[in-house]
Length: 126
Image (cartoon, rainbow, N blue to C red; front, side, top):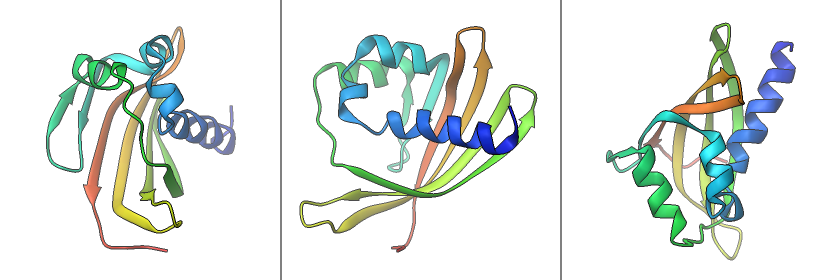
């Protein structure tokens, strides 16, 4: 797969993780999160894979997420760093909770799985 194809594939997987219907689907979440997954949230709190799965198993509904400015660095064969900006979208279409995001994706025998994710608060962007 070329770099553009990989960027498109990982962007699709990443934005799938933004959707409530994905987060509420334990089987899908299990297939997307690497067994050693760790997240450092925009709050600075560290979450393990089991904590993330438990949090979303309760049916939590997310505000819609706007994401833009995706970039990809292939660090080694089968290891890719995806970076982008995101914000939550309010009912009137306003963007809030602007965040810089980075995700480390690993190719496994069962497909691409997210191994690490971090969100860092940032200034408002368009």
